[in-house]
Amino acid sequence: MEPETNLDNPCQPCPEFEPVLALLAADELNVAEQAEAAEHLAHCTPCTKFLANEKALLALILESRREPDAAMLASCRAGLEDALDRAEERGTFRRLIASVMPSGWLVPNPAWSAALLLLVGFSVGVLGPRFVHDHAVPANASTTAAQPAPNEVIPDSSSAPFDVHSAQIAGLNVFPAGGNEPAQVEFQIKSQAPIKIQGTVNNENVKDLLIKILFNNDRYDPDVRLDAVDLLRARNNDPDVRSALCHAVHTDNNAAVRLKALEALNGAEPQDLVRQTLLEALVDDSNPGVRVEAINTLRGWAASGQVVPDDHMLAVLRERMKKDPNTYIRIQSAAAIRDLGPREKF
Image 1 (cartoon, one colour):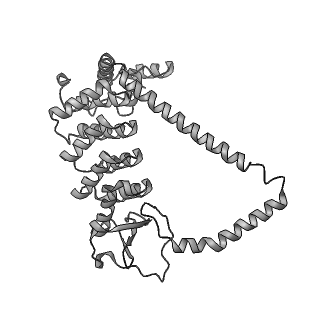
Image 2 (spheres, rainbow, N blue to C red):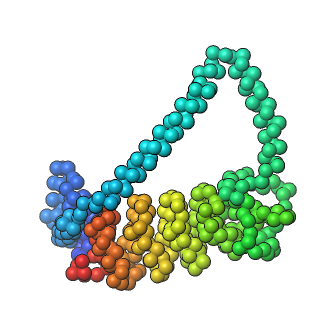
Image 3 (cartoon, rainbow, N blue to C red):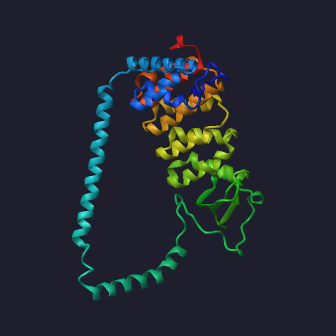
């Protein structure tokens, strides 16, 4: 029985063989897999043409590849030395603690061990609740609290007008909802009379407070900022939300937050602000995962015809095709250029 060929669309390779052909072009198949692919290619013209294009693309990338310059190597070495220094400092601290209180001290002294454990347990039981009650939640704290007690009254955010720009957020709780319903968010706001704002991201007060967190990312822990990005994703076509997500991609010092903000922008309308944010992340971000997410979104736009390329976009993609240290990004940049226009453009 002869292998099936792609007769419905002679210009496209067979979907089930497309990833196999990409691996074959990169010489990543074993002998048996190569034989199976060769048997299919003998009866399928679209797949044969696709394989030839992939080989030509890889050859072009290899010709354009350059070795990293001295500045990049020096930066990598400096980063490695800093990491080793921090590891050594942590090791010194652990050795100091071990010298003061050896790990085996409690084992040979069962009587002292029992007395110490009883004293610690009593202290925690008596002083712990009082300490928690007397201290407010810090501004950069992220809590995962239980649902509010049934008799606790929480003001409706829609009926509690206040100035979002001057509001001081003391805490943030997220209560996931079932099904496709948006999660409930509860904010504790510092004021003379403490205010609790509760609702979903569809509520304007809640949305504005989440945006405030992203624009003041130095005041809140990464977990709080990640929650804010995740909640705002449902409204990524809101202009204010898009602006806040792009700001997070540009300025947040945590790579996980920048990556999640890019993921949240995926699916938003490819406006100039979003496109420029993706291009700048592709060029400037030091984290490979962030750059991969940026090129994946740009490649998706190019393949679906959602974006009209300009000279700047093509110049960035050409530069990444030749210079990016990540092989996947170089390949995807070349593929995006191919999807955006005729081959002569690159």
